[in-house]
Amino acid sequence: MKQPEPKITVLMPAYNVEQYIGIAIRSVLEQSFTDFELLIINDGSTDGTEAIIRSFDDNRIRLINQGNRGIAAALNMGLLNSNATLIARFDADDICMPDRLRVQYNFMLINPDYIIVGSDADYTDMNGDYVFTCTMPAHTAAEIEALAVSKCPFIHSAVLFRKEAILQAGGYDEQACAFQDHILWAKCIRLGKTCNLPVSLLQVRLNPGSISIDEKWRTRRFREIKSQSIRRGKLTMQEGEELLGILKKQNNAVVKEGSYYSLLGKKYLWNNHQPQKARDNLRKAIRINPARIDSYFILVLSFFPKDFISWVYKLKLKGIWS
Image (tube, rainbow, N blue to C red; front, top):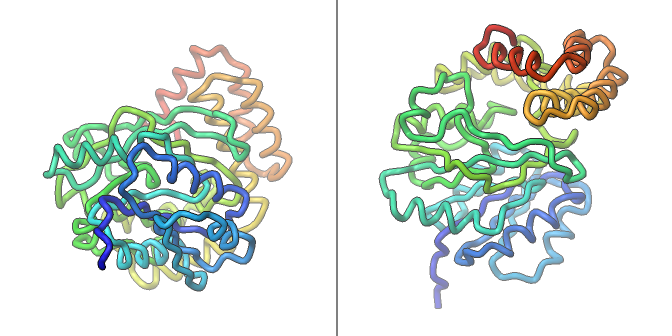
């Protein structure tokens, strides 16, 4: 007898995340909404990731193994193999709040004209300690439509979307390493209504092993390719090859760990005014890469009064200072 289709597929790509994936899986299995499948695409992990996945005895978990092809390819594999019409994205180092699926499912049920619903999120460091709450720059459909294309409208692992709309948009661009979500959202916004719920439904873990880093630590050419391709809605083959070369060159501890501590320093300064924690992390970033002038500037800024720091941050948000 054929099993009934689940209401939601929770789609989780995983690559060498043995340190975090157990906690992430438990946060899904303990959801107040229970009619889901957890589809995990193991993208060629070489650590204990697969063994930890298989240690869970829950028939809602489905595992697909593939060779290491990157997160976008893993997500496309998941889209093709998902059994639900609603897909909840989730990363293997994050944590779902207990009511996340219920809240987002109810929204989509009541609002059939919406194709994507995201949310705000709490960010933690690699140890799970709270850093700041990310309040999205746009929540309503109108606000998201008016948002500058350079601003990513959603936190990737916080969205729930209609699979049909994502497939209509062409799925994830497998050449758009590190911003495959942003380029997809730019296309999806033209296809239907979207929103962010003004509540934190997720804990996003910042960690040096993530593909997403402080983009100020990326090259200028990376940012140029990203900006042009998002506006265009796709990458050329040449841009994709160039982008891959940049990312391979930056896949080292100096960039990944340095950008991690730099980002923590900024967030403790801008978003959760704790200047001492900001300084501790900025000093670590400087020790790892002493050539980054911006780290020194922000470190000096941390000694100024809070009101002055807030003023500088407002200039940053307006694009007057980057």
